[in-house]
Amino acid sequence: MTPYNNTFYLSTEYRLMSEAHECDTILATVSEKGYEHFGNNHSSFYIKDNNNEDLRVGSWLLNEININRQWNESHFIGIVISQEGLPPIDISDLVKKSDRAKGVKWINSPMCYEEMIKHAIKFIQNLPDGYVTKPSLVLFFQISSCVEKSSLIDFYRNFINSKDRLFESEVNSLDELFLSRLRLLLLKK
Image (cartoon, rainbow, N blue to C red; front, side):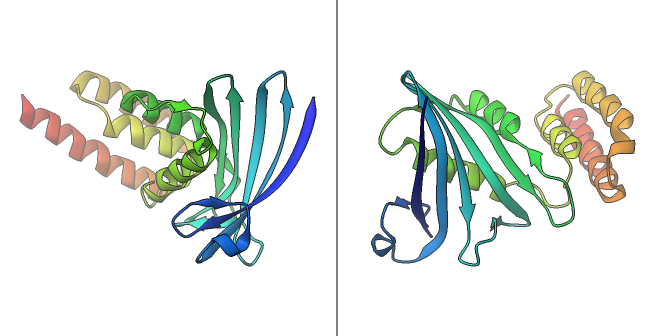
C-alpha cells in the first residue's frame, strides 16, 4: 500500500486547482488523504472553507467525501454531512441510488474527482429543507419517487415505524409530503 496526501483548491465554480493562484476566487481548501493498492485507490477528501471549517452547503456542513477508484470506474463510498449540534450522516447511498436511476457512472479520467466532488456538492444543495436526520431523508426520497399508491402506502408504514427517530418538524413535513403525493397519485387514476 502506498499512502498519499495532496492539497487542492476549490474555486467558486467547483474547479479543483493544484495552485491557489490558479483560482479567481478560492471557495475552499481540499485535503486528499488516501492510499493506492494494486491500482485500487481509496481517497478521502476534507473540504475546508477559508476559516478552516467544514464547507457549508446550504444548511449542511460537508464533513468528508470518500471515493474508491478501481480500474476504469470510481464510486462514492462515503459522503458525510452534518448540521450544527446533530450527529453526522452518510448520504452516499442516496447519491448512488439517484445516480443509478439517472444512469450516471463515473469513468476514470483526469477530471473524475473534480466532477464527483461537484456532483456531491450539488446533490447536497438540493436536499430539502427541514429534513435533518438520515431516516427522514430516506423517507423523503422514497415517498417523492413513488409512482403507485400501494407502494406509497408501504412507505408510509415505514414512516410510521420510524417516527420515534424523527424530529417533530420532520414528521409534519413527511405527513404533508405523503398527503400531497397521495393526492397526486389519486388524481392520475
